[in-house]
Length: 496
Ligand code: NAD
Image 1 (cartoon, rainbow, N blue to C red):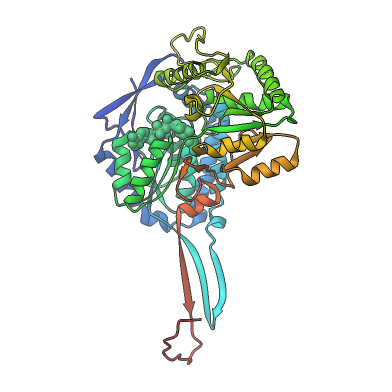
Image 2: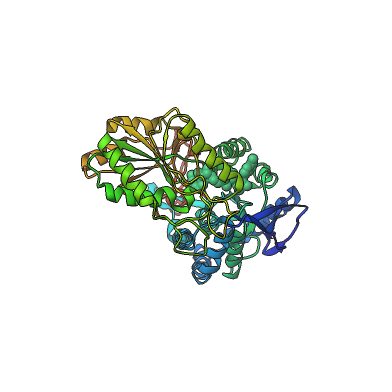
Protein backbone atom coordinates (compact mmCIF):
# COMPACT_ATOMS: atom_id res chain seq x y z
CA UNK A 1 0.00 0.00 0.00
CA UNK A 2 1.28 3.47 -0.91
CA UNK A 3 2.64 5.61 1.91
CA UNK A 4 2.34 9.38 1.56
CA UNK A 5 5.55 10.91 2.90
CA UNK A 6 7.05 14.37 3.13
CA UNK A 7 8.82 16.77 0.77
CA UNK A 8 11.96 18.11 2.40
CA UNK A 9 14.63 20.08 0.60
CA UNK A 10 13.08 19.11 -2.74
CA UNK A 11 13.28 15.39 -2.02
CA UNK A 12 10.66 12.81 -1.11
CA UNK A 13 11.13 11.64 2.44
CA UNK A 14 9.38 8.50 3.62
CA UNK A 15 10.30 8.50 7.29
CA UNK A 16 7.43 6.53 8.75
CA UNK A 17 8.01 5.27 12.27
CA UNK A 18 4.37 6.12 12.82
CA UNK A 19 1.71 6.00 10.11
CA UNK A 20 -2.03 6.55 9.92
CA UNK A 21 -4.69 5.11 7.59
CA UNK A 22 -6.05 7.29 4.79
CA UNK A 23 -9.63 6.36 3.85
CA UNK A 24 -11.80 6.70 0.78
CA UNK A 25 -14.84 8.16 2.58
CA UNK A 26 -17.19 6.97 -0.19
CA UNK A 27 -16.34 3.31 0.45
CA UNK A 28 -14.97 3.35 3.97
CA UNK A 29 -11.89 1.46 2.71
CA UNK A 30 -8.29 2.21 3.68
CA UNK A 31 -6.52 3.22 0.46
CA UNK A 32 -3.15 4.59 1.62
CA UNK A 33 -1.00 5.24 4.64
CA UNK A 34 0.30 8.64 5.63
CA UNK A 35 3.62 9.03 7.40
CA UNK A 36 3.42 11.02 10.62
CA UNK A 37 6.56 13.12 10.90
CA UNK A 38 8.66 12.78 14.04
CA UNK A 39 10.31 15.71 15.82
CA UNK A 40 13.57 14.96 13.95
CA UNK A 41 11.90 14.94 10.51
CA UNK A 42 10.05 18.18 11.24
CA UNK A 43 13.31 19.76 12.38
CA UNK A 44 14.94 18.59 9.13
CA UNK A 45 12.26 20.47 7.18
CA UNK A 46 12.86 23.62 9.25
CA UNK A 47 16.64 23.26 8.70
CA UNK A 48 16.10 22.92 4.92
CA UNK A 49 13.97 26.07 4.91
CA UNK A 50 16.48 27.94 7.04
CA UNK A 51 19.35 26.95 4.72
CA UNK A 52 17.44 28.05 1.60
CA UNK A 53 16.45 31.40 3.12
CA UNK A 54 19.52 33.65 2.55
CA UNK A 55 19.57 33.06 -1.23
CA UNK A 56 15.79 33.15 -1.58
CA UNK A 57 15.51 36.38 0.42
CA UNK A 58 17.90 38.02 -2.04
CA UNK A 59 16.22 36.66 -5.17
CA UNK A 60 14.52 39.60 -6.94
CA UNK A 61 10.74 39.61 -6.46
CA UNK A 62 10.18 39.49 -10.23
CA UNK A 63 12.12 36.20 -10.41
CA UNK A 64 10.09 34.80 -7.52
CA UNK A 65 6.93 35.89 -9.33
CA UNK A 66 7.98 34.17 -12.58
CA UNK A 67 8.09 30.84 -10.74
CA UNK A 68 4.53 31.51 -9.57
CA UNK A 69 3.42 32.17 -13.17
CA UNK A 70 4.81 28.76 -14.18
CA UNK A 71 3.25 27.17 -11.09
CA UNK A 72 -0.16 28.55 -12.05
CA UNK A 73 0.15 26.97 -15.51
CA UNK A 74 1.11 23.62 -13.99
CA UNK A 75 -1.86 23.76 -11.61
CA UNK A 76 -4.18 24.34 -14.56
CA UNK A 77 -2.59 21.59 -16.65
CA UNK A 78 -2.88 19.11 -13.76
CA UNK A 79 -6.31 20.20 -12.50
CA UNK A 80 -7.87 16.81 -13.19
CA UNK A 81 -5.28 14.91 -11.18
CA UNK A 82 -5.60 17.34 -8.27
CA UNK A 83 -9.41 17.06 -8.39
CA UNK A 84 -9.19 13.26 -8.37
CA UNK A 85 -6.79 13.23 -5.40
CA UNK A 86 -9.13 15.55 -3.48
CA UNK A 87 -12.15 13.40 -4.40
CA UNK A 88 -10.52 10.11 -3.41
CA UNK A 89 -9.51 11.28 0.06
CA UNK A 90 -12.00 14.04 0.90
CA UNK A 91 -15.03 12.78 -1.04
CA UNK A 92 -15.72 16.16 -2.66
CA UNK A 93 -17.51 15.96 -6.04
CA UNK A 94 -15.34 16.80 -9.07
CA UNK A 95 -17.07 20.15 -9.82
CA UNK A 96 -16.65 21.23 -6.21
CA UNK A 97 -12.97 20.21 -6.19
CA UNK A 98 -12.47 22.18 -9.43
CA UNK A 99 -14.00 25.25 -7.75
CA UNK A 100 -11.71 24.86 -4.74
CA UNK A 101 -8.66 24.58 -6.99
CA UNK A 102 -9.71 27.65 -8.98
CA UNK A 103 -9.98 29.73 -5.78
CA UNK A 104 -6.52 28.47 -4.82
CA UNK A 105 -5.13 29.45 -8.23
CA UNK A 106 -6.52 32.96 -7.75
CA UNK A 107 -4.23 33.30 -4.73
CA UNK A 108 -1.30 32.23 -6.90
CA UNK A 109 -2.31 34.91 -9.44
CA UNK A 110 -2.32 37.50 -6.66
CA UNK A 111 1.14 36.33 -5.57
CA UNK A 112 2.36 36.87 -9.16
CA UNK A 113 2.08 40.60 -8.40
CA UNK A 114 4.95 40.38 -5.89
CA UNK A 115 7.05 43.23 -7.37
CA UNK A 116 4.07 45.56 -7.08
CA UNK A 117 2.99 44.24 -3.65
CA UNK A 118 6.48 44.71 -2.17
CA UNK A 119 7.21 48.17 -3.58
CA UNK A 120 7.15 49.88 -0.21
CA UNK A 121 6.62 53.59 0.50
CA UNK A 122 8.97 56.49 -0.14
CA UNK A 123 9.01 60.11 1.05
CA UNK A 124 11.52 62.59 -0.27
CA UNK A 125 12.74 65.56 1.80
CA UNK A 126 11.24 64.64 5.15
CA UNK A 127 13.92 67.07 6.43
CA UNK A 128 16.78 69.00 4.83
CA UNK A 129 18.53 66.51 2.52
CA UNK A 130 16.72 63.70 4.27
CA UNK A 131 14.66 61.01 2.55
CA UNK A 132 12.73 58.25 4.26
CA UNK A 133 11.23 54.99 3.07
CA UNK A 134 9.58 51.89 4.41
CA UNK A 135 10.27 48.48 2.95
CA UNK A 136 8.70 45.11 3.62
CA UNK A 137 11.25 42.47 4.52
CA UNK A 138 10.56 38.74 4.78
CA UNK A 139 10.39 37.08 8.19
CA UNK A 140 12.47 33.95 7.49
CA UNK A 141 11.02 30.48 7.98
CA UNK A 142 7.23 30.48 8.28
CA UNK A 143 4.83 27.58 8.78
CA UNK A 144 1.28 26.72 7.70
CA UNK A 145 -1.02 24.18 9.37
CA UNK A 146 -4.16 23.38 7.38
CA UNK A 147 -7.51 21.55 7.74
CA UNK A 148 -8.94 18.61 5.78
CA UNK A 149 -11.85 20.42 4.17
CA UNK A 150 -9.87 22.41 1.55
CA UNK A 151 -6.70 20.37 1.00
CA UNK A 152 -5.69 22.42 -2.06
CA UNK A 153 -7.15 25.90 -1.53
CA UNK A 154 -6.29 26.62 2.11
CA UNK A 155 -2.56 25.79 1.74
CA UNK A 156 -2.63 28.14 -1.27
CA UNK A 157 -4.07 30.90 0.93
CA UNK A 158 -0.66 30.75 2.60
CA UNK A 159 2.45 29.51 0.82
CA UNK A 160 2.31 31.35 -2.55
CA UNK A 161 2.22 34.74 -0.85
CA UNK A 162 4.65 33.80 1.92
CA UNK A 163 7.14 32.55 -0.68
CA UNK A 164 6.94 35.50 -3.08
CA UNK A 165 7.45 37.78 -0.08
CA UNK A 166 10.86 36.08 0.32
CA UNK A 167 10.12 33.59 3.11
CA UNK A 168 10.77 29.85 3.15
CA UNK A 169 7.82 27.64 4.06
CA UNK A 170 7.00 24.48 5.99
CA UNK A 171 3.47 23.18 5.38
CA UNK A 172 1.78 20.67 7.69
CA UNK A 173 -1.40 19.67 5.84
CA UNK A 174 -4.26 17.62 7.25
CA UNK A 175 -3.30 13.98 7.74
CA UNK A 176 -6.78 12.94 6.55
CA UNK A 177 -6.29 13.97 2.89
CA UNK A 178 -2.55 14.49 2.43
CA UNK A 179 -2.07 13.61 -1.27
CA UNK A 180 -3.28 16.80 -2.98
CA UNK A 181 -1.10 19.25 -0.99
CA UNK A 182 1.99 17.05 -1.47
CA UNK A 183 1.34 16.79 -5.21
CA UNK A 184 0.87 20.57 -5.43
CA UNK A 185 4.18 21.15 -3.64
CA UNK A 186 5.88 18.89 -6.21
CA UNK A 187 4.42 21.06 -9.00
CA UNK A 188 5.98 24.09 -7.36
CA UNK A 189 9.37 22.36 -7.51
CA UNK A 190 8.71 21.54 -11.18
CA UNK A 191 7.95 25.23 -11.74
CA UNK A 192 11.54 26.00 -10.74
CA UNK A 193 11.38 26.79 -7.04
CA UNK A 194 14.79 26.17 -5.42
CA UNK A 195 14.93 23.20 -3.07
CA UNK A 196 14.21 23.99 0.56
CA UNK A 197 12.04 27.05 -0.11
CA UNK A 198 8.87 24.93 0.15
CA UNK A 199 8.73 21.86 2.40
CA UNK A 200 5.84 19.61 3.37
CA UNK A 201 5.72 17.51 6.52
CA UNK A 202 2.75 15.26 6.96
CA UNK A 203 1.87 14.51 10.52
CA UNK A 204 -0.11 15.30 13.62
CA UNK A 205 0.36 17.07 16.95
CA UNK A 206 3.99 15.90 17.23
CA UNK A 207 4.97 17.78 14.05
CA UNK A 208 2.75 20.79 14.90
CA UNK A 209 4.31 21.18 18.34
CA UNK A 210 7.78 21.35 16.80
CA UNK A 211 6.63 24.12 14.43
CA UNK A 212 5.17 26.00 17.41
CA UNK A 213 8.27 25.77 19.57
CA UNK A 214 11.30 25.90 17.25
CA UNK A 215 12.90 29.36 17.45
CA UNK A 216 13.73 29.32 13.74
CA UNK A 217 10.03 29.45 12.81
CA UNK A 218 9.06 33.11 12.85
CA UNK A 219 5.35 32.96 12.01
CA UNK A 220 2.54 30.42 11.96
CA UNK A 221 -0.65 30.52 9.87
CA UNK A 222 -3.33 28.09 11.00
CA UNK A 223 -6.78 27.17 9.68
CA UNK A 224 -8.90 24.56 11.46
CA UNK A 225 -11.30 24.13 14.38
CA UNK A 226 -11.60 26.73 17.13
CA UNK A 227 -10.19 24.70 20.07
CA UNK A 228 -7.03 23.90 18.07
CA UNK A 229 -6.85 27.47 16.67
CA UNK A 230 -6.86 28.81 20.23
CA UNK A 231 -4.14 26.35 21.26
CA UNK A 232 -2.00 27.26 18.22
CA UNK A 233 -2.43 30.99 18.79
CA UNK A 234 -1.66 30.94 22.51
CA UNK A 235 1.34 28.58 22.12
CA UNK A 236 2.86 30.32 19.09
CA UNK A 237 2.37 33.76 20.68
CA UNK A 238 3.87 32.63 23.99
CA UNK A 239 6.89 31.45 21.99
CA UNK A 240 7.29 34.88 20.40
CA UNK A 241 5.94 34.02 16.96
CA UNK A 242 3.59 36.01 14.81
CA UNK A 243 0.37 34.02 14.47
CA UNK A 244 -2.93 34.08 12.64
CA UNK A 245 -5.27 31.21 13.58
CA UNK A 246 -8.59 30.88 11.79
CA UNK A 247 -11.18 28.75 13.54
CA UNK A 248 -14.67 27.32 13.23
CA UNK A 249 -17.97 28.88 12.30
CA UNK A 250 -21.74 28.91 12.54
CA UNK A 251 -22.99 31.01 9.66
CA UNK A 252 -26.52 32.39 9.71
CA UNK A 253 -28.61 33.62 6.78
CA UNK A 254 -31.44 36.01 7.58
CA UNK A 255 -34.46 35.52 5.32
CA UNK A 256 -36.47 38.76 5.44
CA UNK A 257 -40.25 38.87 4.82
CA UNK A 258 -39.65 40.70 1.51
CA UNK A 259 -37.02 38.24 0.20
CA UNK A 260 -37.42 36.40 -3.09
CA UNK A 261 -37.97 33.03 -1.39
CA UNK A 262 -37.33 30.92 -4.52
CA UNK A 263 -33.99 32.61 -4.99
CA UNK A 264 -33.14 32.29 -1.28
CA UNK A 265 -33.95 28.56 -1.40
CA UNK A 266 -31.70 28.01 -4.44
CA UNK A 267 -28.85 29.91 -2.80
CA UNK A 268 -29.28 28.18 0.54
CA UNK A 269 -29.31 24.72 -1.05
CA UNK A 270 -25.75 25.04 -2.36
CA UNK A 271 -24.48 27.01 0.64
CA UNK A 272 -25.89 24.60 3.26
CA UNK A 273 -25.31 21.24 1.58
CA UNK A 274 -22.45 21.84 -0.91
CA UNK A 275 -19.34 19.90 0.07
CA UNK A 276 -21.59 18.00 2.52
CA UNK A 277 -21.70 21.13 4.71
CA UNK A 278 -17.97 20.78 5.42
CA UNK A 279 -17.13 24.41 4.65
CA UNK A 280 -16.23 27.04 7.21
CA UNK A 281 -18.49 29.39 5.21
CA UNK A 282 -21.41 26.92 4.93
CA UNK A 283 -24.74 28.52 5.80
CA UNK A 284 -26.00 26.21 8.51
CA UNK A 285 -28.73 28.35 10.09
CA UNK A 286 -31.58 30.12 8.28
CA UNK A 287 -33.21 32.77 10.45
CA UNK A 288 -36.69 33.40 9.10
CA UNK A 289 -38.19 36.78 10.02
CA UNK A 290 -41.95 36.32 10.43
CA UNK A 291 -44.01 33.13 10.16
CA UNK A 292 -44.95 33.73 6.53
CA UNK A 293 -41.31 33.74 5.42
CA UNK A 294 -40.60 30.78 7.73
CA UNK A 295 -43.45 28.64 6.40
CA UNK A 296 -42.64 29.41 2.75
CA UNK A 297 -38.94 28.74 3.29
CA UNK A 298 -39.49 25.36 5.00
CA UNK A 299 -42.04 24.23 2.43
CA UNK A 300 -40.03 25.21 -0.65
CA UNK A 301 -36.73 24.04 0.82
CA UNK A 302 -38.07 20.60 1.75
CA UNK A 303 -39.42 20.19 -1.80
CA UNK A 304 -36.15 21.28 -3.43
CA UNK A 305 -34.17 18.92 -1.19
CA UNK A 306 -35.94 15.88 -2.69
CA UNK A 307 -33.95 16.41 -5.89
CA UNK A 308 -30.47 16.37 -4.37
CA UNK A 309 -28.10 13.61 -5.47
CA UNK A 310 -25.62 12.28 -2.94
CA UNK A 311 -22.82 9.91 -3.89
CA UNK A 312 -19.31 9.30 -5.11
CA UNK A 313 -16.95 12.15 -6.08
CA UNK A 314 -16.31 10.89 -9.60
CA UNK A 315 -19.95 11.28 -10.70
CA UNK A 316 -20.41 14.96 -11.45
CA UNK A 317 -24.21 14.55 -11.38
CA UNK A 318 -23.94 14.24 -7.62
CA UNK A 319 -24.46 17.40 -5.58
CA UNK A 320 -22.37 16.34 -2.62
CA UNK A 321 -20.44 13.39 -1.27
CA UNK A 322 -19.73 11.73 2.06
CA UNK A 323 -18.42 13.16 5.33
CA UNK A 324 -14.71 12.84 5.97
CA UNK A 325 -14.72 10.08 8.61
CA UNK A 326 -17.02 7.57 10.25
CA UNK A 327 -16.58 9.54 13.49
CA UNK A 328 -17.81 12.72 11.79
CA UNK A 329 -20.79 10.82 10.32
CA UNK A 330 -21.77 9.64 13.80
CA UNK A 331 -21.25 13.12 15.26
CA UNK A 332 -23.55 14.71 12.68
CA UNK A 333 -26.25 12.08 13.26
CA UNK A 334 -25.86 12.71 17.01
CA UNK A 335 -26.54 16.44 16.51
CA UNK A 336 -29.74 15.65 14.56
CA UNK A 337 -30.83 13.24 17.33
CA UNK A 338 -30.18 15.88 19.98
CA UNK A 339 -32.19 18.56 18.12
CA UNK A 340 -35.12 16.16 17.90
CA UNK A 341 -34.85 15.23 21.58
CA UNK A 342 -34.68 18.89 22.58
CA UNK A 343 -37.94 19.71 20.77
CA UNK A 344 -37.04 20.76 17.21
CA UNK A 345 -38.87 19.34 14.16
CA UNK A 346 -36.85 17.20 11.73
CA UNK A 347 -38.61 18.05 8.46
CA UNK A 348 -36.25 16.27 6.06
CA UNK A 349 -34.22 13.49 7.66
CA UNK A 350 -30.90 12.34 6.13
CA UNK A 351 -29.86 10.05 8.98
CA UNK A 352 -30.69 6.75 7.28
CA UNK A 353 -29.39 7.48 3.80
CA UNK A 354 -27.80 4.51 2.03
CA UNK A 355 -26.06 5.13 -1.28
CA UNK A 356 -26.36 2.17 -3.66
CA UNK A 357 -22.98 0.58 -4.28
CA UNK A 358 -21.42 2.63 -1.48
CA UNK A 359 -23.17 1.16 1.57
CA UNK A 360 -20.10 1.56 3.80
CA UNK A 361 -19.47 5.21 2.84
CA UNK A 362 -19.77 7.96 5.43
CA UNK A 363 -22.91 9.49 3.93
CA UNK A 364 -25.58 11.58 5.62
CA UNK A 365 -28.43 12.94 3.49
CA UNK A 366 -29.44 16.59 3.41
CA UNK A 367 -31.37 17.36 6.59
CA UNK A 368 -33.73 20.23 7.40
CA UNK A 369 -34.63 21.00 11.01
CA UNK A 370 -37.33 23.56 11.89
CA UNK A 371 -38.18 25.31 15.17
CA UNK A 372 -34.60 25.30 16.41
CA UNK A 373 -33.92 27.52 19.42
CA UNK A 374 -30.83 29.20 20.84
CA UNK A 375 -30.50 26.84 23.82
CA UNK A 376 -30.23 23.66 21.70
CA UNK A 377 -26.90 21.84 21.45
CA UNK A 378 -27.23 21.58 17.67
CA UNK A 379 -27.62 25.36 17.45
CA UNK A 380 -24.65 26.19 19.62
CA UNK A 381 -22.13 23.80 18.04
CA UNK A 382 -20.55 23.81 14.60
CA UNK A 383 -22.10 20.67 13.06
CA UNK A 384 -19.94 20.57 9.88
CA UNK A 385 -22.41 18.36 8.03
CA UNK A 386 -25.35 18.61 5.57
CA UNK A 387 -27.78 20.04 8.11
CA UNK A 388 -29.75 23.27 7.73
CA UNK A 389 -31.50 24.50 10.87
CA UNK A 390 -34.33 27.04 10.79
CA UNK A 391 -34.79 29.48 13.66
CA UNK A 392 -37.96 31.59 13.58
CA UNK A 393 -37.95 35.16 14.90
CA UNK A 394 -40.33 38.12 14.70
CA UNK A 395 -38.00 40.99 13.80
CA UNK A 396 -34.73 41.71 12.03
CA UNK A 397 -33.31 43.09 15.31
CA UNK A 398 -34.02 39.75 16.96
CA UNK A 399 -32.29 37.94 14.07
CA UNK A 400 -29.24 40.20 14.33
CA UNK A 401 -29.02 39.74 18.10
CA UNK A 402 -29.01 35.97 17.61
CA UNK A 403 -26.05 36.26 15.24
CA UNK A 404 -24.17 38.72 17.44
CA UNK A 405 -24.65 36.54 20.53
CA UNK A 406 -23.15 33.46 18.85
CA UNK A 407 -19.55 32.63 19.76
CA UNK A 408 -18.53 32.47 16.08
CA UNK A 409 -18.47 35.34 13.61
CA UNK A 410 -17.09 33.98 10.35
CA UNK A 411 -19.70 34.62 7.62
CA UNK A 412 -23.32 35.69 7.34
CA UNK A 413 -25.84 36.70 4.71
CA UNK A 414 -29.14 38.52 4.38
CA UNK A 415 -31.77 37.78 1.73
CA UNK A 416 -33.88 40.89 1.14
CA UNK A 417 -35.10 43.36 -1.47
CA UNK A 418 -34.72 46.26 0.99
CA UNK A 419 -31.50 48.23 0.47
CA UNK A 420 -31.87 50.14 3.73
CA UNK A 421 -32.20 46.93 5.76
CA UNK A 422 -29.24 45.37 3.93
CA UNK A 423 -27.08 48.42 4.58
CA UNK A 424 -28.01 48.52 8.27
CA UNK A 425 -27.22 44.80 8.52
CA UNK A 426 -23.80 44.98 6.87
CA UNK A 427 -22.89 48.07 8.87
CA UNK A 428 -23.74 46.67 12.29
CA UNK A 429 -23.51 42.89 12.32
CA UNK A 430 -20.58 41.49 14.35
CA UNK A 431 -19.30 39.13 11.66
CA UNK A 432 -16.17 39.36 9.50
CA UNK A 433 -17.57 38.42 6.06
CA UNK A 434 -21.04 39.56 5.02
CA UNK A 435 -23.17 38.70 1.99
CA UNK A 436 -26.16 40.61 0.70
CA UNK A 437 -28.14 38.13 -1.37
CA UNK A 438 -24.77 36.34 -1.71
CA UNK A 439 -24.76 33.13 0.31
CA UNK A 440 -21.01 32.36 0.43
CA UNK A 441 -19.28 35.74 0.67
CA UNK A 442 -15.76 34.31 0.45
CA UNK A 443 -13.54 37.31 -0.36
CA UNK A 444 -11.66 37.22 -3.67
CA UNK A 445 -7.89 36.81 -3.55
CA UNK A 446 -7.17 40.56 -3.65
CA UNK A 447 -9.21 41.15 -0.51
CA UNK A 448 -8.49 39.19 2.68
CA UNK A 449 -10.36 36.37 4.42
CA UNK A 450 -11.19 36.23 8.10
CA UNK A 451 -13.94 36.05 10.67
CA UNK A 452 -14.53 37.86 13.93
CA UNK A 453 -15.01 36.68 17.52
CA UNK A 454 -13.89 33.06 18.07
CA UNK A 455 -13.55 32.43 14.34
CA UNK A 456 -10.14 34.11 14.22
CA UNK A 457 -7.33 34.54 16.72
CA UNK A 458 -4.85 37.23 15.70
CA UNK A 459 -5.11 40.58 13.98
CA UNK A 460 -4.44 40.03 10.30
CA UNK A 461 -6.76 38.09 8.04
CA UNK A 462 -5.57 35.44 5.58
CA UNK A 463 -4.26 36.15 2.05
CA UNK A 464 -4.68 39.37 0.00
CA UNK A 465 -3.30 42.64 1.43
CA UNK A 466 -3.38 41.31 5.03
CA UNK A 467 -1.39 38.27 3.85
CA UNK A 468 1.39 40.52 2.53
CA UNK A 469 1.49 42.34 5.87
CA UNK A 470 1.49 39.06 7.79
CA UNK A 471 4.41 37.58 5.87
CA UNK A 472 6.59 40.71 5.98
CA UNK A 473 7.98 43.05 8.59
CA UNK A 474 8.22 46.73 7.96
CA UNK A 475 11.58 48.46 8.13
CA UNK A 476 11.75 52.24 7.88
CA UNK A 477 15.00 53.84 6.77
CA UNK A 478 15.81 57.52 7.13
CA UNK A 479 18.79 58.71 5.10
CA UNK A 480 20.74 61.94 4.86
CA UNK A 481 23.42 62.79 2.35
CA UNK A 482 24.68 66.24 3.45
CA UNK A 483 25.78 68.63 0.71
CA UNK A 484 29.56 68.64 0.49
CA UNK A 485 31.20 70.91 2.99
CA UNK A 486 28.09 71.28 5.18
CA UNK A 487 28.61 70.20 8.79
CA UNK A 488 25.82 70.26 11.35
CA UNK A 489 26.48 70.96 15.00
CA UNK A 490 25.35 68.70 17.82
CA UNK A 491 21.73 69.16 18.86
CA UNK A 492 20.06 67.79 21.97
CA UNK A 493 16.49 68.67 21.00
CA UNK A 494 14.30 65.86 19.70
CA UNK A 495 14.56 65.98 15.85
CA UNK A 496 11.60 67.85 14.38
P1 NAD B 1 -8.69 20.45 13.01
O1 NAD B 1 -8.62 21.60 13.94
O2 NAD B 1 -9.03 19.12 13.56
O3 NAD B 1 -7.27 20.25 12.27
C1 NAD B 1 -6.62 21.31 11.62
C2 NAD B 1 -5.12 21.06 11.63
O4 NAD B 1 -4.67 21.02 12.99
C3 NAD B 1 -4.71 19.74 11.00
O5 NAD B 1 -3.55 19.93 10.24
C4 NAD B 1 -4.45 18.83 12.19
O6 NAD B 1 -3.47 17.85 11.95
C5 NAD B 1 -3.97 19.81 13.25
N1 NAD B 1 -4.32 19.37 14.62
C6 NAD B 1 -5.43 18.68 14.99
N2 NAD B 1 -5.41 18.46 16.31
C7 NAD B 1 -4.28 19.03 16.79
C8 NAD B 1 -3.71 19.14 18.10
N3 NAD B 1 -4.30 18.63 19.18
N4 NAD B 1 -2.55 19.79 18.22
C9 NAD B 1 -1.93 20.32 17.15
N5 NAD B 1 -2.42 20.25 15.89
C10 NAD B 1 -3.59 19.61 15.71
O7 NAD B 1 -9.68 20.85 11.84
P2 NAD B 1 -10.26 19.96 10.66
O8 NAD B 1 -11.25 18.99 11.21
O9 NAD B 1 -9.16 19.45 9.82
O10 NAD B 1 -11.02 21.07 9.79
C11 NAD B 1 -12.34 21.48 10.04
C12 NAD B 1 -12.37 22.73 10.88
O11 NAD B 1 -11.66 23.77 10.23
C13 NAD B 1 -13.80 23.29 11.04
O12 NAD B 1 -13.96 23.72 12.36
C14 NAD B 1 -13.85 24.46 10.07
O13 NAD B 1 -14.77 25.47 10.39
C15 NAD B 1 -12.45 24.95 10.17
N6 NAD B 1 -12.09 25.75 9.01
C16 NAD B 1 -12.01 27.10 9.18
C17 NAD B 1 -11.72 27.92 8.11
C18 NAD B 1 -11.63 29.40 8.27
O14 NAD B 1 -11.15 30.04 7.36
N7 NAD B 1 -12.04 29.98 9.38
C19 NAD B 1 -11.50 27.35 6.84
C20 NAD B 1 -11.57 25.96 6.71
C21 NAD B 1 -11.87 25.18 7.81
